[in-house]
Length: 254
Image (cartoon, rainbow, N blue to C red):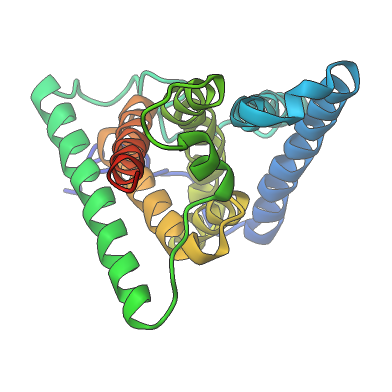
């Protein structure tokens, strides 16, 4: 007999009926939420123009996504489309799944951090062999500076990239969009569409493949452990290691 707990995020509900409508609905909720999020950001910018300048930009994106998540979740409840029976509602994981040993959770986390880093290096190397230079976002490099001076922009970058972004992005892209698409969409759509949207949202076209890879790694960490905390932890660790690398390179270059 098939183990019902083999995949904490796999729905046992119907997947064929209303498939296209369901996919459009979920993407529409995401777009609607992002739009409201930008309106909130623009409203803040009108009151305090400084929020769109310097290091504040690293805090604006998580804020927008946080608003998006609230709007997305509220819209789903208001329209009356129930949350899919895939567990991981919030940050604790499925209440019906067996307890996950702490050692397993840490093992999943470590394996996926390694996969995120190794995959990024491999993809970057392949792209360089193909003559495509993978550049870091200009604003990030500007904040890193010489890698020695801790400016307000650099502190904001660390807070945004290592703390706020992993929480907001995993909630929206994995906890809502990915989780819900796995009910409505074919498996390949549920995996690839959130990954593509996540990659495009970073606005770094040379690094598109790397961001898409990272999205798949984060989603699989979520799938394997059934908890957004694991995906958030992998995401945070990846961003932390990336920032450490950028600061080291900047120091060696000065």
